[in-house]
Each structure stands twice: as structure tokens, then as C-alpha cells.
Amino acid sequence: MLLERYTYKIGANYLQYRFDSEGPRGKIGKMVLYTYLTTWDGISYYNLGFGDYDDVTGRLNDLAVSDNGDRDKILMTVALTALEFTSQFPDAMIVIRGSTSSRTRLYQMGIARNYREIAQIFDIQGVTMEGESVPFRKGENYRSFLASRK
Amino acid sequence: MRKVKGEIDPNMPDLSNDPYFVEKAESSREMLMKYVLPKIRK
Image (cartoon, rainbow over the protein chains, first blue to last red):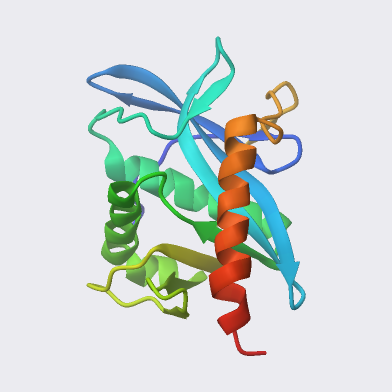
């Protein structure tokens, strides 16, 4: 099934992805930002940052709740940026952690809902509350997620 | 695999040094170094 997604623009370094959410609350700028964290055992870890982007102030707000009725379309677009990003950085491991615990749960539900499609392309690990990375399982709660290309 | 390439925007502002996100990344780095990576079996 081809899920709906937004068209995005890419920063010249392939670390930033910009798109617009469109819904009842109008057009809301969004940005996905991948930030290098560290390299461990030959794997480079990048943090996935995501939030509302204001073109005027140039600021990214990862605490904003835009409530624009397009949650799944946004999650799909973010997932596609991860696909694009890992095409450029195939050995990268993406660290996904919501800006709040409720947003982490939102990511968790999004991964669970679309796990069959996601798992064809990415290995998804859940990081437990004890800090152990284990294969993602639906219904489990995690503090963050690790995603790498298969 | 389907190509999903977006369009490159050379004028997109560089947010890599945004203080807020530098701090967030540092927090994620600390979590990785302290809790996650030491438990990954080589």
C-alpha cells in the first residue's frame, strides 16, 4: 500500500529535510534534523530531531503540537527522510527519541502500526527502560528506538 | 526500491549549530554512551 506523504526539500548536507504539513490549521512548516552523535564499533549514531519550523525566525520547535489532522502522513514523511538519509549514510544508526514521553509513545505507535512495511527496509531496536537494545516488539514500551538499514 | 529523492535546497538554513538541538543531541549522546552502547555485544 502506498501511504500518503509530503514532498520534502533536502539541505545540501543531507542532514536536514523540510516539508509543510497541510490541514485544518493551515500550512505548518516541519523540519527533520539528523545530528551526528558518536561512532561505536564502526557504526555512526545520529539523533533524529523533528519539529515545527518557522521560516521567519529560523527556529525549530520540537515541543509544538500542531494538531493538523495529518499525523500518519507526517510520520510517513519522516520515515521517508530516514530512507533518504540512510541512502546517503548507509552505515548510520538513527536514534529516535521523542521530545516528550508522549511523543515517544506516538513514535512507538506509528512504528507498530506500520511495522510490516518498515521492517522490510529497517532493523528497528527498542531501547528498554534499563538501556538495553532489543528487537522491537509491538505492545512494549521503550525509552527510544534505534533504526538502521537492512 | 522506489526512489524517494526530494529536491535539494541549497538555501536551507543550517541548523546543525542550533543551541537547543545541540543540547538535545548531547543528551542523546549521553544516554547512548552511558546506557546503551556498553550493553551492545560485539
